[in-house]
Image 1 (cartoon, one colour):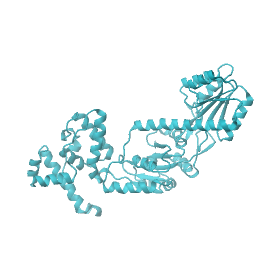
Image 2 (cartoon, helix red, strand yellow):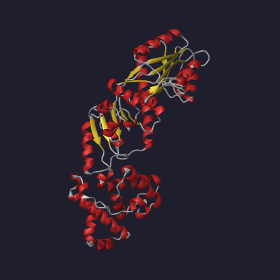
Image 3 (cartoon, one colour):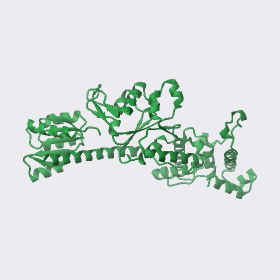
Image 4 (cartoon, helix red, strand yellow):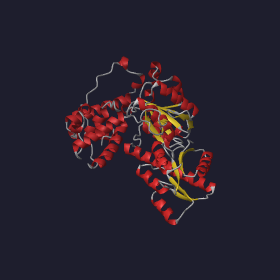
Amino acid sequence: MSQRHILVVDDEPKMRRILELMLKEMGHEVVLAANGRDALKLALETQLDLVMTDLRMPGMDGLALLTTLREQGIAAPIIILTAHGTVESAVAAMKSGAYDYILRPFDVAAVEMVVTRALALDRIQRENQFLREEVEKGWGEFIGRSAAMQQQYDLIRQVASGDTSVLILGESGTGKELAARAIHRASPRHQALFVPINCAAIPRDLLESELFGHSKGAFTGALQDRVGKFERADGGTVFLDEVAELPPPLQAKLLRVLQEREVERLGSNRSVSIDIRVIAATNQDVQQALRNGTLREDLFYRLNVFTITMPPLRHRLDDIPLLVEYFLEKHGVRSGCGWPAISPAALVCLQSYAWPGNVRELQNVVERALVLSRGAQIDLRYLPPEVSAVVKPAPTPVSEVRPQQLALPPAIERLERTFIGHALQETEGNRTKAARLLEISERSLWYKLKKYGLV
């Protein structure tokens, strides 16, 4: 586990030394201050996990320091120590936000227990804050019962129980982060943090600090120590999204972290041990990235212990009605539009479109349709032109057809969907006229609509 940073504030050198030795024996890093003013300056410059301060000190006393730290937004737990304890001072300290109040002389074992509990509380509070921020970003559960998704569910269940590194491949919008979260939730680490890092979204000049942290003064603007996301994930899971976008020097440093299970903050020569599981993902062709040199071969083999490939939406068309229903409920309730229905013709169009943006694109299309329809049934009018224009695809030359594309049942289903979509579009959703246009009975059309989940 990583070290915790503790500030000890006392005007008596002997007491500062006693507390310093005790805390270092517990494995923590200790910063010392002889008065409240120095303590406040250190607290503003250093990432602290706990503050232990004497109550009576010349100048700024412990209560004044406590109040000022809270006003400055420093949320680390604060323990008050004093040899002049009164009920009034104890009540005042607790009301001002102190974690605990300890009388001197104290029992070392009792103080160690209080420190351990305070640090555990601090970690829980930081994790809760982190999780609240993650929840605000929004993410749902897997939706889909297709054979393609069932295969991925089986792989997730198989790999979740261990600590194996996992590489998740797939196009943008296929749910790679959802797969990583599912692995974490089903793993023994599920009570610790899941920390996602989008390697392509963070500016390169900030990426090393974001991953590994930095020490005060490491670069211009580094006004205090910063804990990196690898340290923050200690005990949990790190998800490196778009890992192939990492610059080569950072790929080398990441490889060392994976091998040694240690991180070294930018500007520091001290290594911090961490206990993490790493899951990585990329939408790139990894073999091409290896040939181009944009992905280090040794890093690839370290990450690629177990591979999961998320299928594109065009390979799981049967899941589209379920996904549409989920997004209608989710965004309809959020926008106050209720939970509107979708016409069969519109649903056929959604199932006939290629979805280059995959599930993320489908979600955006549904949300857009909800805004335009204002709670009315969603039909072809509310779909984007590229989706509503269901065009009969040009026949593929036999020479270009791959063996796995020769299966007749799925090809017939795709063709039927397309023709049904054309008919419903031409007849504006009138099933009687559509059946007549298709030269089948209404009963047969109804059967096919149910078969393809279009009703």
